[in-house]
Image 1 (spheres, one colour):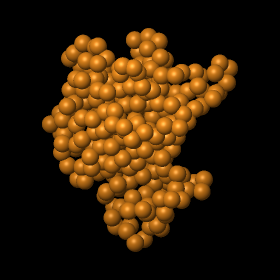
Image 2 (cartoon, one colour):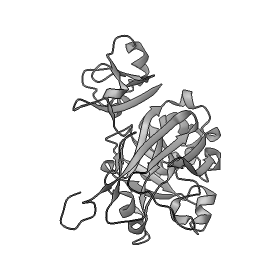
Image 3 (cartoon, one colour):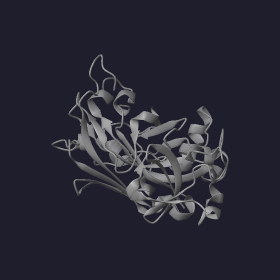
Length: 291
C-alpha cells in the first residue's frame, strides 16, 4: 500500500494512494486520527483496505502533496554512507555512522518547490532512501530491526554546501526551510521487497547525476535502526534518511549546483519517483528577516 499526506482546499489530511486518486482516510480509521503519524502510532494502517469503497476519492490533481510525514518527532540523517561518496568527499572510513538531524520545516512534498537560499550559490542535490518508523523501540537488535519499518519513501537531502561547511557540523546547511524533498508516498515493505535490490538514481533536468543501488550502503538499514535506537527512542513517524551515493554536484569538476527553474528527480526502484522544481527564496538567510 502507498500512503500520502496532503492539503486539500486548505485542510490537511492523509490517505491511501490508488492510481490517480487518494482515498481520504482523515478521521475515518478513528475520529481522532487526522494524520499519517497518528495512524502509525495507533497501528491502524492495516485497516485501510477495509475502507475501500467507503472513503471519499480525491483526485491527485486537486491535492497539494505534503512531506510524507509532515510532523515527525525526529528526522535522523546519515552522511557518507556509500563508499564512492565517502571517497569523493575525501573522508576516512568510520566505525560508526555519521549522524546529523533535520527540522520538519526543512522538508517539502512531491511536486512542490525546493527553495534555493538567495544567500548561497551552492545548493546541491542528494538522492536518498527514507525509512519511516512504524512502532516504538529502544535498543533494537539488528535481527528484528526491519520489523519496526512502516515503509519507505524517496528523499532529496538538498544541501547548502557553504553553510554546511562553516564548521565540521552539517546542521546549518541541511536545515534551510523547504530545502529537502520527501515523497511522494510511504510505500509499505510488502510492496518494496528486499530493499538491497533497489536501484537509486537522481536526474537533474533529465541528466543522470547519481546512479547506484541500496546494496552499496556501508551501514545497512538494520544497523542504522539498531544504532539510532541506542541513543534515542524511536517512535512512529520518525524518519531515518539513509545517505546518498557518489556523484553529488559539489564534488564534480566543474561543480554542478541546482539553480532557479531546474527540475530534479529521485527514483528508487519500487518506491517511486520524487520530483521537485527549484525556486529561489529571496529572503532566505537575510539578516533580520524571518525565513
